[in-house]
Image (cartoon, rainbow, N blue to C red; front, side, top):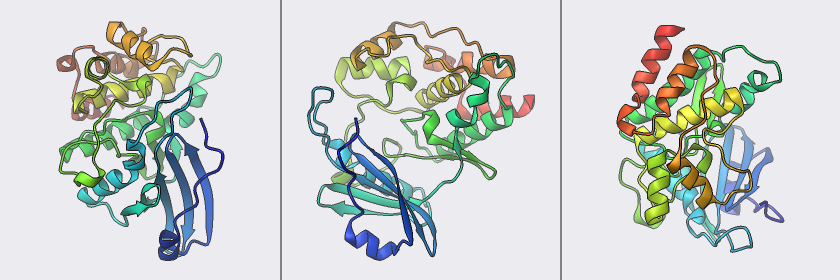
Length: 282
């Protein structure tokens, strides 16, 4: 659900960036994102604010903290040109803009009627390498989905780290993990959210989410079948109850996705093993 009007970039941030142009990228569910052009390059400016209760959504305060939390994580990971802070509705961050196409958009031709070609293993490998690189730092992403895998000629950028876990977070910006976009949740994450209201992001759950992302991008199907209008509780219960849909992606990638979607985390490959398998089959 979109807000009536996007929040403008705070004056203090504008004065620092001095943008020559700006473009609204996102304005929904507690987040407004701008792309800005400056003399130093292109940046994403994220603004977080609380979600007010509606007939569709419960009130959520954590969305106001998400940009600040992500900014702290990116600085912890030594990412360049990242800043974050507070504004009167919540928190903000500034980070370099990542050009390219999302995994889902890039693989649209494979979902077209009559399409049968196997998706590019090099592109799948690039996505897996981005996940493995994060895991190598000791962090789990917690919100892997096709929109967060941005592919360009330089490789794949794994974006939106606000829900990541793996190190110290400033207490003022931290909040409990309540799951992610349900279409990509693993059974153990969905089960924990149903039982306790929260969960813990893990690298094995990231591998499951990457498999689900590759699956929906290649085949156009969610990993588990449930009605489009199902509640989040019913969606999660369907994931817990399983099984996942048959993986109808051709070739090596389909076989690998099948293993990545194993209901038991111990049966899934690591992200590094996914990379190794894709590298050997290219």
